Length: 287
Ligand code: ARG
Image (tube, rainbow, N blue to C red; front, side, top):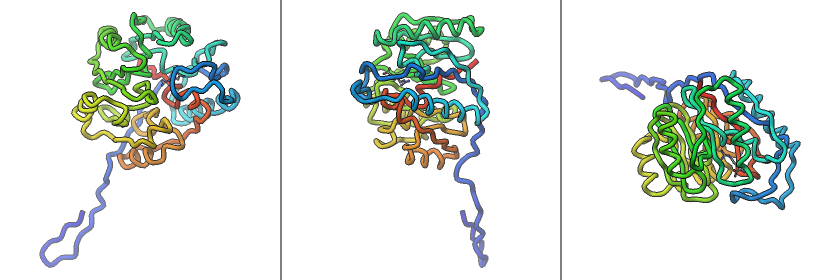
């Protein structure tokens, strides 16, 4: 900004272009990918004929966990179970808002047993208000808490009737959003929450009506590109300042940096072969 008075030299003020983003300490639940593999295909990313390195997945997951701890967050872990190769994607097994838990019910029979392992973890870890859904509900895979609304995806996994169940169980206003691209089969690969009432999303993943809902609710949103979405860049985790996202998501990282956030890159190449990224591995415990 330059101010010019009559007969004066211009005064150039250094006006910050983005607000200062303040992180808050988070508590996450994660599950080590000790039994990770791609044994079946329930989304277009999964090709069971491609080789998978479980050791590399464990290495990448450990680096993700250490990234959170390095940012000052607390990470709880749940014991991985043999025969449940997708259990690493902890975000699909529960939605916790204000200490209330809504568990999950998986669409694919191959993942069904995960839900009860997490239900028992919640009960063993002091949660008293734990509701298990009647309808297919893949938890934070399709449910995103903005601090005001619970954004709820449907189209591939979570049943639209599960959205009403979530509203009752958690006592929060639910906004249903229709997903239309099978590569972005969960809401959390198409949208993430940067800060209270600020999101980033990939427009093409949504139906025209749902896109208008997003534009209406979040006129300041970060709008992601095809390349941001294609590396699962939207499967990111923000603590209000730091945004943990896949290393390939350079364009998206630049966009969030312009808004005052600090991108923190992680390599999730092995987990992406199952259609997952940082957020899928991370359930937030909002106690
Ligand atoms: N292979 C898993 C599935 O298709 C990946 C889940 C990723 N999780 C997520 N929150 N998007 O169910």
